Length: 288
Image (cartoon, rainbow, N blue to C red; front, side, top):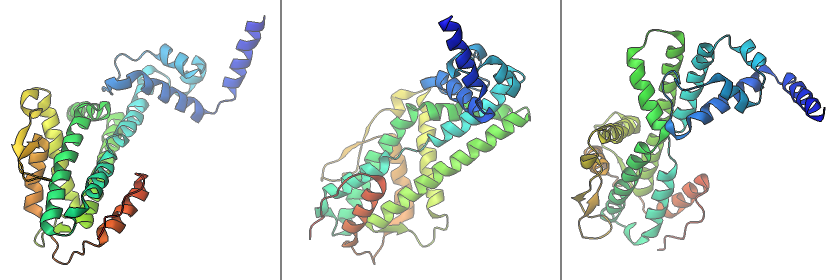
């Protein structure tokens, strides 16, 4: 009898849920089932009864919102695309950059010293970006869904997914462009005067190198995951570079130059500003 009472109470609580609450619970439960496997178009292994049980909602309320599994999956694809697109950006890059620049105040005072710091940033951050990409369920989902959309059957649900992925990609590129622009401002480098593409195109080209190598990793990891000797950075000795970093170095050399009007005394204050904005903690003074 007590169990019957508990079941009745639970049903009463479910009955008071709004449509949006039920929708949110169902999306969260369904996305949780994908886990690290990422998203595949159509979610072929998705079992509605399992999702409904995990969401803790009644079957009748679910089928009032969606008449069929296909109708639910159509909306879920768009929700998943938005979720995974937002996960593509990795904020570790700025934290890493702050740590590297703050650790070598002795290199702040000259253009050559700051170039060495830029090279080290490229070497470390682009390696991080590459391995974050190939290990990311979000990126794998983005890739799989983008590829599937090449065979778009003009369905409305797929058009919504494509638009969501595009917006997510735009946000990712915008974040990367802001990062590279911040690094240029921090260390006194600017785009060449005859380059009109801005940092957005610079970021697009850089991310294309990382993602292209990540795709090649699927068929030939022996090449993409190897390391090669490259130019020295913080010491005078050649050091190991990942292919993604070497590729990005070519973009940097083509499009960025030292700003002759740069005042290195601004580095310390801007480091602190970036650290505060990212919650990276305190930054030691750069010194005279």
